[in-house]
Structure formats: C-alpha cells, structure tokens
Length: 156
Length: 156
Image (cartoon, rainbow over all chains, first blue to last red; front, side, top):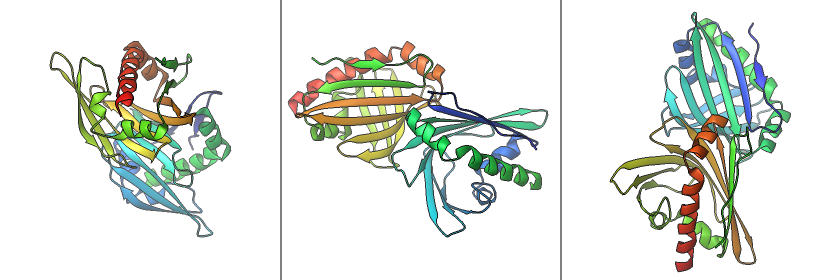
C-alpha cells in the first residue's frame, strides 16, 4: 500500500502531505466531495463521522461531527474557498474545541497513468499552531484516514 | 504619525504588519467592522471602495469592489472565521482577479493606556504567493490605507 509522506520543516507555517492512489482523479475527487462517502473514510476507524453540513461550492460551509468509541463528540468545520473539479479544493478547517485557530488547506490532485497523487498543504496562523497539531498526533490520524480512503476507492 | 511596521522573513508564508493608533480598541474595532465606515479608509485615496457584502459574523461573507481613477473595478472577498469584539478578527482574503489564491488574515487588537496596537498577520498558501503580494506593492497600499484609518479615527 502507498505510504503517506509528511513534510513539516522547522519554523514554517506549513504541513504538506502527499500520497498516491491507484484511481483516476475524477473518482478521487468525487470520493472526497460526496457527503454520502465522507463517513466511510474521514477520521479514525474506531470513531463515527456524521456529516452535519457539506455545501461543496465557493463560500459553502462544511461541518462534521466525530463520535468516538466512548460517545464523546468533536465538531470540525470550515468554508470552501475553491472547488475546481477534479483538480483543486481549498477550504478552511477549525476544530470547535479550539475556536479561532484556523488553518487553510489546499488539496491538489495530479493524475499520471490513471493514478492520482494527492498533495494536501495546510497553512496555520502560527508556527506554534502547526507544531501543536503535529504534537497531537496529526500524522497518525491522517495516515489512518487516507488508508480508509484508499480502501474506499477500491470499492467504487 | 505612527509608522507601519512590516515583517516578512525570507522563506516564510507570513506577513506581519503592526501599527499603533491613538484610540481605544473598542473604537478601533468598530471602525474596522462598520460597513458604513469601510469606504472611508479601505484602499487607496485615489480609488473608491464599495462595500457589496459585509456580514461580520462567523461564516459571514464580505466583498468589496474598488474602483480606481480610470473607472476600472477590482473585487475582493472572503469569509469571517472569528469575530471577537474588541480583540480579534479572523477572515480569509482573495482578489477576484486571481481566484483560488487565498490568504488567512488574523487581526489582533491590543490596548495600552487608551491606545491600540493592531497586529495584522496574513498567512499565504505558499511562499511564492506571499512574495508575489509583496512585489505588487502590498506594503505601500497597506500603509496608505492605515494612514486613512488613522485620519478616520480622529473624527470618531
């Protein structure tokens, strides 16, 4: 299985994650932007994701609620700033447990020989915010979520 | 008159602008967020700013149109992500002439002895985007706009 590559240079505002998927990018883009499919891949396997809002267009709001095995709920939300199928998505991301700490995420899909590379770049308001996200296990969580995404793509 | 201080370290995603104003921050915050006042300070003196949309609340959209001396119009837009009067505003910013290039701006107001320091931090999707903004005279434009803001505060 393809591996997640994570780049977070010291002192920078940015995290760049890249990963290859064995599917054409039109399909990858659809799997990322279909509210019915999001609960099948977003977040960790042990938790349940509920799509509360997902209005995939410029200015549209998204909001997911993640319920963990203990029934505890965490809300995540943001606003779509660019939706250019099948190549680019730009949106903001905020954990409701820490309001006012926003990141700006740009997802670029590149296709080559029927496969797709996802380049997922996040910029944070501060280097401290970025480092905090890394320290809270962001890489492991993202890795598991992209594994689930890979599994989902094989069924579509 | 107080001077604008601009920090843009090489290779970073960020521009930080700071400036002092001789007014309490409740007044400064109001002047920044009142749609009726924005045309009096936003942008350059030689141009006219029209507030098309300005819904100052989490998730609310703003859109300004700037008409220059030749009648040429440029649209700017974004979404408010945090509105915490009188201390913090977070919003996205996009020039409609280059859609999909977004920046995330965090404005913090600090009061001391009845005066206010504005700390305006912008993070861009890439260092190239940030450097492009600097090369297009961002500092001069911002400086003129903050001068106008200073003039406006004296009348309130």
